[in-house]
Amino acid sequence: MWTSASRKLLAFVAGLSLMEGVWAVPIEPRENQKKCRKTTVVVLGGGMAGITAAQALANQSITDFLIVEYNGEIGGRMKHTNFGKKKDGSPFVVELGANWVQGLGTKGGPENPIWTMAKKYKVANEYSNYSSILTLIDDYETAYAEVEQYAGVILKENLQDTSMRAGLALKDFKPQKNMAAQARGFNALAKGMASTFLKPNDSRLLLNSIVTDIAYDKDSVTISLNDGSCISAAYAICTFSLGVLQNDEVSFTPKLPDWKQTAIAEFQMGTYTKVFLQFNETFWDLDTQFFLYASPTTRGYYPVWQSLSTAGFLPGSNIIFATVVERESYRIEAQDDEVTKAEALAVLREMFPDKHIPEPIDFFYPRWTKVPWAHGSYSNWPVGTTLEGHQNLRSNVGRLYFAGEHCSAEYFGFLQGAYFEGQEAGMRIAGMLGKKCKNMEGGCGEYKRYEALHGTTRFAEFSPLNGWDVSSFYVAGK
Ligand SMILES: *[C@@H]1O[C@H](CO)[C@@H](O)[C@H](O)[C@H]1NC(C)=O
Ligand SMILES: *[C@@H]1O[C@H](CO)[C@@H](O)[C@H](O)[C@H]1NC(C)=O
Ligand SMILES: *[C@@H]1O[C@H](CO)[C@@H](O)[C@H](O)[C@H]1NC(C)=O
Ligand SMILES: *[C@@H]1O[C@H](CO)[C@@H](O)[C@H](O)[C@H]1NC(C)=O
Image (cartoon, rainbow, N blue to C red; front, side, top):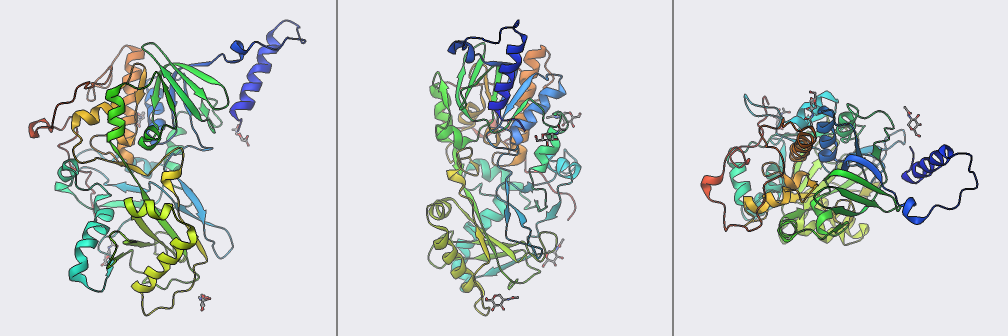
């Protein structure tokens, strides 16, 4: 794969050879070297939202686009790593971020597009069996509230707690989701999608490319990259995570308007940490997928444990992982691996007092809030955020558009939220470029925005169109 630097060099050399027999060319003046690469639409970020936006453009014959991705591969927070080892010494693959397909479809209605693609691109899915839960607590009565609040939230509500928005979404909640466990990694979804409109090594995908500044106005957008190059486009779709926007990883020229900055600051980036341990044996019950633990003293202290050694996941792997969220995530992110490992082992020893629990042979957890291209796992709808306030998170500023899971009023925090928002932004821009709107449902042209917010969202304002009325996807069968 070409790095953007070598690509630039090549373009430069190609440019030279076109000049008539002048090999002793003087060094180009700085201004010329800074000449920006031109494209119609620049898509910032190659996660689910970015890849979907580009596919939506390609679907409407807009093929002049560039996708700018920080990492060496696409997939964004659908990220995996090698962990532990098999008998033959090769590593297992574990997912560090998104790998749930939350709800597969609406009964008699549309299917969750993530589920459609999981089937299409053969990302193996294993049903998460919530009947297969073992609650490992001493004093069930007093600890129950803790388990319900933390373990329950993680398992069933996927961290979408307390807000009115979540309360409504959960009224028809069915805790059905599938978890992907397969050797290629869950980002095979993004790669599968991309393969429908990008050629292998397509020059429109710029990997390892870090955006430093986004300059925008009514007519164009200019993206500066950290290698000194730039891209000038008619439209941009920024799919960076809310965490990236909140942490000023990228500057905006001019500064984003107040209504936009407020929306970014007030929405919430959550964090979710999986702590992986591999042992030399599976000392826990092989038929159980989930183990719940309630600490007698600390809320949210390693509350949910999930076995990957179970059939359908990574059988025989002797891998188990704990999930912690929010305050506990921040706490363990800030401490050394050894401290966290000792805490996790102490919890396991409390959960399985009759077992001899050896030291793990491998141990790892990601520190999502410290990842410069993510700054957290996924967004949460904070108490008190109105529909109008959230709409401002989605709205474009001039030619700069936004997409990502945090932009979805209905599915924030989920992959399908990223999908729908990427699709919407791509459709709107394709409509403006083609002068023909094909996005009848979501609307066309610029996004609505509210420079002045009105107090609260009245009940009558919740409707299927803004997503507030619609229940989570329903899983047929099982
Ligand atoms: C894509 O690039 C890789 C790495 O440079 C190379 O090995 C591979 O052959 C290329 N594939 C195609 C289809 O050009
Ligand atoms: C693009 O078109 C294909 C084929 O009709 C469809 O399956 C896919 O969902 C479309 N993508 C988007 C993002 O709308
Ligand atoms: C889920 O777990 C329960 C209890 O262990 C078991 O009886 C049931 O067969 C499992 N269901 C599926 C679909 O595996
Ligand atoms: C795992 O390691 C422990 C401690 O080193 C040892 O006692 C136990 O026998 C080992 N188990 C297996 C299956 O090798």
